Image (cartoon, rainbow, N blue to C red; front, side, top):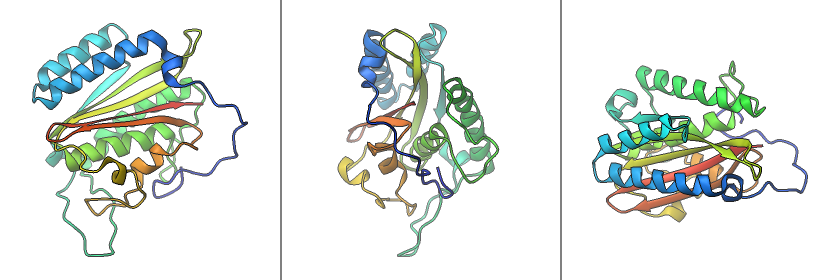
Length: 229
């Protein structure tokens, strides 16, 4: 990914697409998807403690790698005010927000390295696929929702071997008013670039795949993206 958050162009991959993640993960991921949807339903109803209890149980069972609570937006981002017409700004993270994301990204880098995905750990200008996705999903929660949770879990191939990982971000919030428009380049309701979700949703990326967005008006949104080679 290039400076400014835009993915770096890489040589085209051979014309052989990896199997769909539902085939990669099989029955186990289908069961986990139901568990995560149930956690999202609890969170969207304001029952964050119950959602966290279920995620703690899933982590204890080894079904998920890690999860992070995305609350207290005032601690992590400065108030977002509409910019002057024609102006574009970056998400204004506080020092606490930057430290929090650095911890999340460090754990994601550990998992990326398990699958031979270069992480650019020491670069301030280039992001790994997991870092780009996590930054976008977390900051969207802080900007637009009351609270949220970011989850990471492994994906398996058809033989049951680990292939990559999935990031799932669920929130309690107003929902996305126009999901189709939110995936258009340049669409932003907070004055930022409006590039993050559209890049994640692109089907020609080498490492990020199978973007999904589900939203419920007045309840919240759940977004997922797979990371594998």
